[in-house]
Amino acid sequence: MMFKWPVRVYWEDTDAGGIVFYANYLKFFERARTEWLRSFGLEQQNLLKEHQGLFIVSETQMKYHQPCRLDDLLSVSAKAQEVGKASLVIAQTATRLDGNSDVPTLLCEGSIRIGWVNAQTLKPARIPQIILDYFL
Amino acid sequence: MMFKWPVRVYWEDTDAGGIVFYANYLKFFERARTEWLRSFGLEQQNLLKEHQGLFIVSETQMKYHQPCRLDDLLSVSAKAQEVGKASLVIAQTATRLDGNSDVPTLLCEGSIRIGWVNAQTLKPARIPQIILDYFL
Amino acid sequence: MMFKWPVRVYWEDTDAGGIVFYANYLKFFERARTEWLRSFGLEQQNLLKEHQGLFIVSETQMKYHQPCRLDDLLSVSAKAQEVGKASLVIAQTATRLDGNSDVPTLLCEGSIRIGWVNAQTLKPARIPQIILDYFL
Amino acid sequence: MMFKWPVRVYWEDTDAGGIVFYANYLKFFERARTEWLRSFGLEQQNLLKEHQGLFIVSETQMKYHQPCRLDDLLSVSAKAQEVGKASLVIAQTATRLDGNSDVPTLLCEGSIRIGWVNAQTLKPARIPQIILDYFL
Image 1 (tube, chains in turn blue, brown, purple, yellow):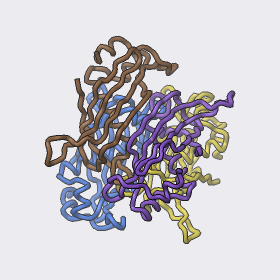
Image 2: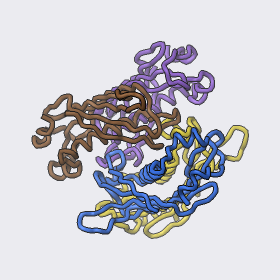
Image 3: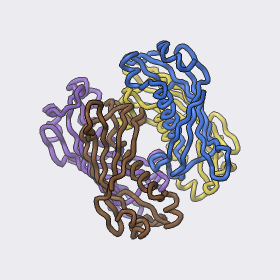
Image 4: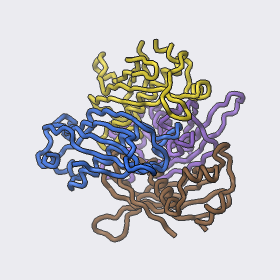
């Protein structure tokens, strides 16, 4: 079960090296995770209201393979790599289809651990079963 | 001639006030301008290669009317307000359709002056006629 | 009464044009405003706790004169231009001292209107007198 | 040999959770690395001119331990963890001194691999010896 989300590169994403600033792939990855949740009908404001909790990122591992540039159109993927009681690890990639090939170029890949926390205390808590079910 | 582009609000766009950080509307506005150019077939990397120039922002005037929040879906508009030989003024708004109304809520409006500059020197130059024609 | 705050340009601030991304001057300006308040002993978290309010930006006018680049050291100024009951207009500049001159180069200037709002409702409210006194 | 650099948290760094957005620690870490190089007399624009190369981030591993908030003053550390011919791994932490303790609170820690690349091709290359010597 692999979710994909398109991301266009704008000026705001680039740096003086002429390429996307590496920290911004974390934003691209998060947009894809957010849209993946939304595809299940889960909106983060609603999670907060209904379950008094939110997902926060507790660990990231990123590898940068190829740079990308202004106007590039990326495809960002997300899939569950580990599903635990209190946290999930999401495996993600950013790829780009290049003109003369059917095989997308891998730009960046990462593993993102997101933990469920109580919205008031920010302490770890069990992920509500109704949310967990979407990943199982 | 009014161009519109949808923008979704993610965590990256918000601040500790719980709302979109005001500087980020400039990013939203730029995404809409970029997609507007792209709708004419103009990509910024190509402008650079073919015309050795680029648009840079030289003035902005922004008014913030209503805040917006995580998960909100905005519509960002762009239209030409002034068309000059060396610069354009683009009038832009960000609005949000709220559930119980047909009239979109105005969140933010602005005028953005973009000037054409030589890519090497960053000095002002005349906008290539082929680009100008799209705005006339 | 003019406050000044140094700002160094890092990769995060630049874009693929090789220069500081224009929206980021709003961040630089805000850092200077925040440090200016701090120089009076006013911290924003405390304003929130003690006065149940916060300053939000309601209007900005920016003019971009000269670009700046990675590693540049800027001086950002702030001074009160208008002091009202519910909002202030702060005049700000970003300048850079260039090697062979005593006169700083003006990179960017702007007027930023900040309004005081109730922290819960985000509705405009009167600026607490104790804060206003610092600007009078 | 441990380098430390202070970083203040501003509105721009926070998100709607009321805390620093996790991707922004990568910016804080990079500011510290940049100032560390500057403390050796190495400026990135000069590296580019003199050695036709630049450091790019090729891998990051981050762990987020405790959140931090608006107005917090962090101390960001950097030290060499691995020194290779073509890349370095820099170990970094962000900590905060809390009022009633001498032991700083660990907010975030990470390992950042930076590789030296040719500025034109962005292909990996050997780190110039004069730069490497600072880390040995």
